[in-house]
Image (cartoon, rainbow, N blue to C red; front, side):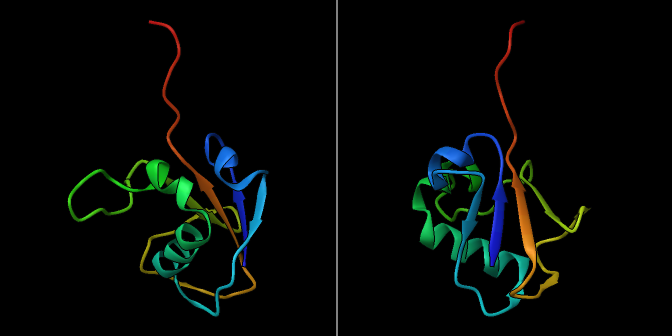
Length: 90
C-alpha cells in the first residue's frame, strides 16, 4: 500500500511517499502497519495515553475524501496522512 505523508511525518519516512505491506482491511489496520514500518511516526499519530489511540487531529484521506478509521480499505489504495501542524507566531 502507498502512503503519502505531509509535515513532520516526512522526517519519519524519508520522503513524501512510503510503501507498506498491507493485504486489506480497515483504515486503522493500515495505520498500524504504517507505524510498524515507521515507528518514528508514532509521536505524530498517536496520543500519549497509557493506551494510545490515533490523534483526532490527524487527517486521513483516500482519493481526496476524508475517511473514518473503521472504513474498509483496499490494499491498492493510496492513503494520505496529514498530521496537525503547530507553531507560528502569536
